[in-house]
Length: 168
Image (cartoon, rainbow, N blue to C red; front, side, top):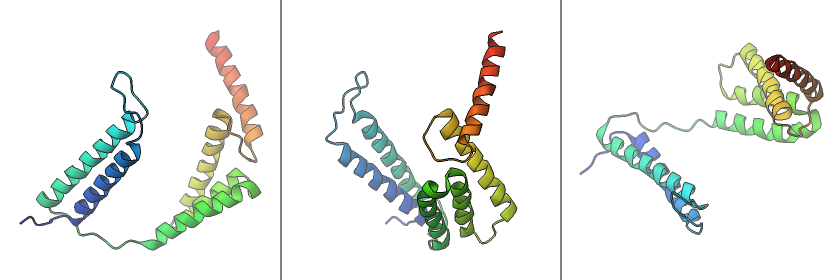
């Protein structure tokens, strides 16, 4: 009789196989095609089989290698991250992108009991700045921001200077 030596790998393997089976089930109506002429079902089917293969590897490992037991789920981090995302989704329209992101990070990081407030604030400010640069300036997404117009103008000027210097 097989003895489970690593319950975490057993759970992960069963979950991966379940996800792969769900992917194959929902992709069964899509045209598969071939490697030369791929249909819309080609990639999801292959991805589902790869995920199920990973699940099989995890199942094999659970019977051969020793591992830790399954730990109890910590609800505090999950609830704080969920609350942060909900707050962000509601506040982005009312207080703009940057402060909503700062609040998202501030709320989500409270899920840990050992949160360093200085590091959290630095992360929040960097995330807000990077989000404006990536989504508003570079990708041109229409998002309500405080600084989008100023950053967009600054990056456009820098890009034109870089392009003219590169061409010279």
